[in-house]
Amino acid sequence: MQKKVEIKAKFDLHHIVRGMKDILPQETRYWELIRRKVFELARDYSFQYIETPIVEQQNLFVRSIGEGTDIVEKEMFTFTDQGGEALVLRPEATASIVRAFNEHGMINQPQPVKLFYYGSMFRRERPQAGRQREFHQFGFETLGDSQAITDAQLILLAYNFFKELGLAIDIQINSLGNSQSRERYKKELAEYYKPKRNQLCDDCKKRLLKNPLRVLDCKNPNCVELSLDAPQIIDYLDEEDNKHFTQVLEYLDELELPYNLNPRIIRGLDYYSRTTFEIWPSGKSEGRQNALGGGGRYDGLSELLGGRPTPACGFAVGIERTISLLKEKEIFVPGLETPQVYLAQLGDVSRKKALKLYENLRREGFTVAESFAKDGIKPQLEIANRLNIKIALILGQKENIDGTILMRDMESGTQEVINYEKIIPELRKRLSKVNQNNGVKIIRTDISNEEIKL
Ligand code: AMP
Figure 1: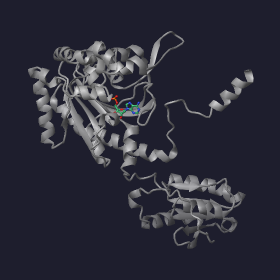
Figure 2 (figure 1 turned 90 degrees about the vertical axis):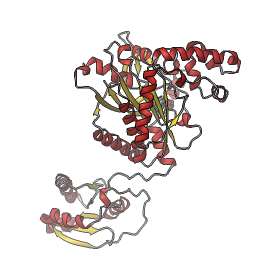
Figure 3 (figure 1 turned 90 degrees about the horizontal axis):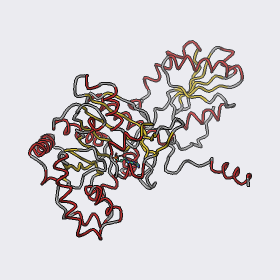
Figure 4 (figure 1 turned 180 degrees about the horizontal axis):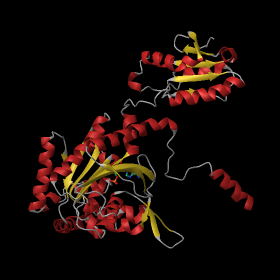
């Protein structure tokens, strides 16, 4: 029996936990691109980077996201630690940002405080395409500002992120009003669904009792169909909410930013008020299933978490889904920079010398590739070729004795003997001639079988 368990355990160690994914080296160029774009936009729009821990108190999300939401009811990775504390792997970051805002007295800083984050989130959902249990989001949050122009500028920022990556998206927008108007609306909605209760899915039957708003968020085709004639929240907004929403739309019009008014965008979380929006890949009819991101205003969240009243607005974007779309649309994504120089060596003495030369070159600012563990020049040059490196330096036994090095033009195959002391200026001269295509090149992954003649 003991043996069986051991064998199974050994076998299982080859497998990742269900719903988690490795990000493999061939994927990193997508991640680099997105990270660069996020930080670039943050700089342009003056947002400051913040990191909060992955582990938070369970109650932080129960209070903010709300009991009765899918996330809190069934998707949180919760655990009690050795000290008896009820903890959770964060399912999203907005509540953590508000916690940090309150905890560090950011209300005393000039308002608004504009923060952005980037990191893993955890939801124990049923894994499927576009749904993982660990996934990554970045998000932008503006705290301490209630103006409609803030909502519009955040939507613009989200729009620009996708546009600048070459992705066409649709903005779906709605307003949830304030808590009083929402309560009135919920009652009307419950009245509307009551006679249709039997046609709703089992989850929605429960939702109807707890929070009828969530029925609008259901993806079951029957429930979607039934929601088409449901009363719309927009008719229940009070004057101030209406004014706010109209202003947001006017700003978007001013920016000529296309959007769809969508009364079904209620978002799955309790803390939203007024503006809510989602970002869908352009033209996808089942957009909501593939939502790239979403956000909205959460004016009451800070108070809900025990802080001072702090109006705020923000959004989050899913990185995995953005990458899937980049791939689907076959958007060109540059690879990591090709090293400028390859350093090849032959024999023990050269290997030692090459180890030191490598450091000199690196300190002088060159990007250098090597395969010091390899013997034989030919296999080393094959690697240089495969990496698409333009210049190889070859340090053989003869060069060692003569105090020289061979400089090989990898494209033409021509080689020149260079005095060891002149390596750096020679390299600079030659590299300035090589067209580096703005320094960004795709690494060739195909292995060339070209015969390399020495
Ligand atoms: P939400 O916080 O639910 O509004 O999610 C914002 C974005 O995060 C979504 O639009 C998705 O792009 C992404 N996202 C949410 N949940 C998952 C998941 N389980 N797996 C992958 N991406 C997700």
